[in-house]
Length: 404
Image 1 (cartoon, rainbow, N blue to C red):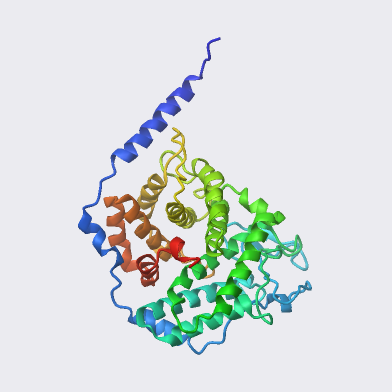
Image 2 (cartoon, rainbow, N blue to C red):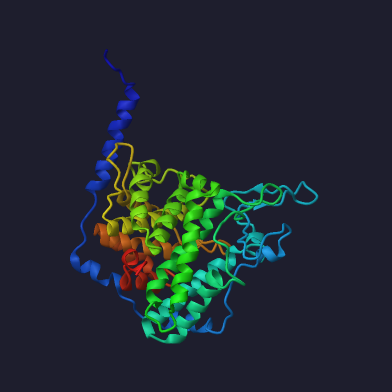
């Protein structure tokens, strides 16, 4: 029997292969000296000033459950779906209706624990960076007090689950999509190696943190919401993997982390990235550059973990699928004509400029691509707080340092 393929499929296959080949052929290797300046910290005055201003701030912890209309136990993390708004045709506004890409200000109020968690993660990151620069124990002490309040103190700590995250008023009391909220805690875990040397880092802090993340990893692996989120094809699936692998490494479950990378993460890439480098699911969104940056940043986290564990997560070559390097070059092309202010939302505190800079630093060293080096030099003056990703990439090798 002779198999016949429609002519248009053959043409598409050839075009796709050519596009993939052409994009790779355009890559140029950076000269070694171009990489030397990637980790130049520069003036840290601004960073230290910001860290000093929060030394006297009381620690943050989840409080939305205490004022929620629905009764939840103390410590329950509660957040509201950010793109859902009151129905103007309803007397009480219920049920809420979706406006994709438009953040409802209510979701950034005291009715949601997400703003507090974002602020907590940013404080820990900033204070640990200040401590790594100066050795001043006051920075480490404040960071550790914040960690103790959010994760360990039985009177204030967050319960290690997300059963009531990104709830939609009038529709549900929590959704699997809420798992994405916890990506901020990846920054917390990356901050830990910077303050472990502190005299204030005691055994109860180490043990308490690992207990919390052990429970959370179990919830991620076994809960209905966790399993649903693992099946997501877009950035939600990517950041599920980042959470699970990062936190598993932190609690010493290296074998499981490696298995997940090899059996789950590896299979996502061909689905997500076209041969041109376009990210299929992220470019459909109202803010395609924002989501593309966010998703690729997650992938670079996963590649770092895979390197440490000796796992190859590069998918088998397919004519319809691209690589991470393809996606980064494609994204650079999109970003050349875009001002960061166009993709930053004052209500959505995902710092896309910093994420993009972090992505470029990590990928420049991995791929040594001159186009990436050029983009770093172009956007660095526009980035707010560039010191934090530089410190993180220069002073720690997170996968290797996490569980020590």
